[in-house]
Image (cartoon, rainbow, N blue to C red; front, top):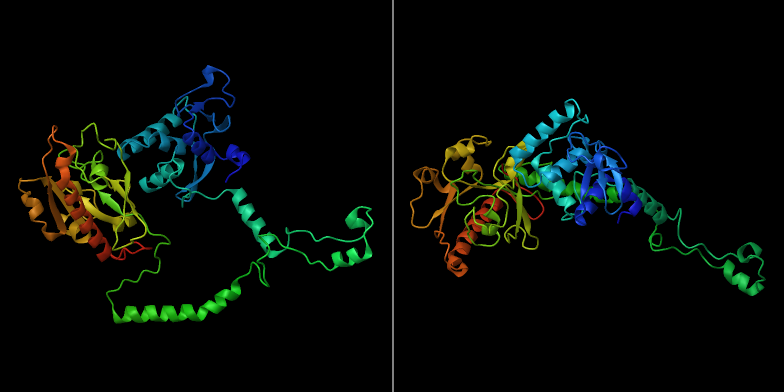
Length: 424
């Protein structure tokens, strides 16, 4: 838990606490913001960001933060812009970033620039700021946390800390007379350790000897893996497997004719009920550019739910993100794939699962039929505004069939309990 002094000095913690308490953050042109004229709601001319909770403090907007993107710290202005544009589509966020940089460089601007965050980094930042996650791979730890870890190591080694033994004599008792027999007992006491130092051993912090003990086991495991690879050449060699399982990605069609869009996909895949994209009961904003849903896939990890990232454009994709795409929803319109890694539908659906959702009773488009078994064709009952929710009972059956196909496809691509795909 960060101290109040640490929070006052760290802009990321200040912004997270302000969001948690629903307190406004006000861009200003001066540090004190004592007059109304100093308040400037434009990020292009403001130089400070005023926080009112948990403490009232102004932080320069060009202050580097602990959030690292492209191997350099991201300043507070870029972080705050990403938070303000959290509900906007990716193209609109990119346009806002370019416009702000132009305004900053123009006459009267505050100078400097804002950094455009890739969508996965932006999603990770927003999740942390909303307190939905306690850690982020892009945020460096606080200096106080590093010092605390070093101090704990010293205590564990027995160099510092622990309970000071009772000493005899005038120095130990500050002039009090001690019975000689009691002094003899005190002299026989041994130094006691606290909870951090009681487990210290011969080598309290140096575990290099464990590496030597483990070397034969590691060598035997490596030899077995090499033998398995030699016996089965189809097994992929992936020495740089990720330390933690990545989040799989689902791509939606950006077409206005699609039955499933960003506004209703969450209620469909998580809730098992179809509602029109433009319905007032939609669970997500139509302008949302990124969503995430959770689902337990028993064949991959029966004990821990997986988080799926849902987007409708691959504009901010890095090359390695394509291996994480586990499903592509399509309407049969080939222009959807122009910005994809695989622009031909036949190539795309050899690498990932295609999903077509149409109205029950209507014919599937010939283009979708021509793409073969790589595309799962499903149908939902036509929407009726006056129908009851109970009449949509067949929607869940459709949703379960989609999740079953996604799960089988992910398992075939090498997704496991603690690792991502091994087949691209």
